[in-house]
Image 1 (tube, helix red, strand yellow):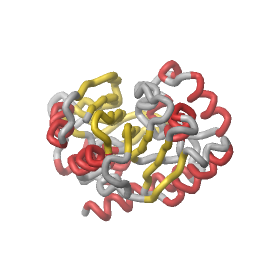
Image 2: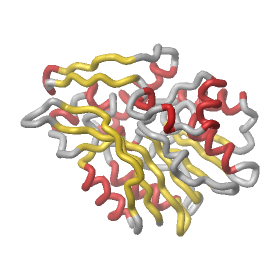
Image 3: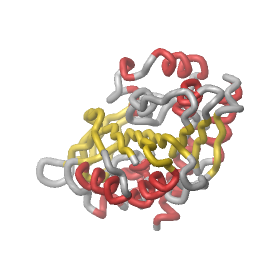
Amino acid sequence: MNKELKTRVVNAYSERISGKPKGQETRKNPSAELNVIQPESCCDDCCSSDSFDEDTREVMDKLDIQSFGCGNPVGLSSIVAGDVVVDLGSGAGLDCIIAGKKVGPAGRVVGIDMSDAMIAKAVENVAKLSLQDIVTFRKGDIEDLPVEDKFATMVISNCVIVLAPDKQRVFDEAFRILRQGGRMIVSDVVSDKDIPDELVRDEKLFVNCLSGATRVDRYFGMLHKSGFGTVEELERRTYGKLNHGQGGIELYSVTVRAVK
């Protein structure tokens, strides 16, 4: 089931990067009594333009690049020159590019993605800004990272871990590749209640970053279980709501920092 679900996620986002127009759409699923209006990129809605720094807005305009994120982990990460950054689910490369501009020639950024189409687009975008000596990409699964132990000083991710069936494994892998004192900064979708299995199994809900959300306290608990010491919430925004059961299930976009 997990393999099939991952394939569907890859196919869905590969189609989006191939030219599906931006804009708001209403996603409805009768089985979940769902009526959530959200943009193709959450950052067009739950994250205002003020969430992006000047460098990020400049890159987005210059490359006409689309973000599928739900926050701004790079902007809240305090990346410095010389950092070695790994981006889990790097998409078209936006966060990698911004990180690459911050780490400079002394640093390195590696983006991990399962989609050939996403990687091709990301490589193209990086080349346009002549950052290919700093920013590179590897095809791989964030539950089994193609990265050596203690490689990175920072791990980032933007609305991707919500799409991983085994989130504990993702956090374990992030911990493994971080050096001692390294930081993990992720923006992701969480919920205020446990999401029923029948909704998790709903492909449309899952692929659209809805039913894969983990209850926020469990999310923090998994980070601690992986070995992270300090875990703190940096930002929280409303993401949407699953109209299921009494009172529904609230969804939030949170940005979290964890330190090894």
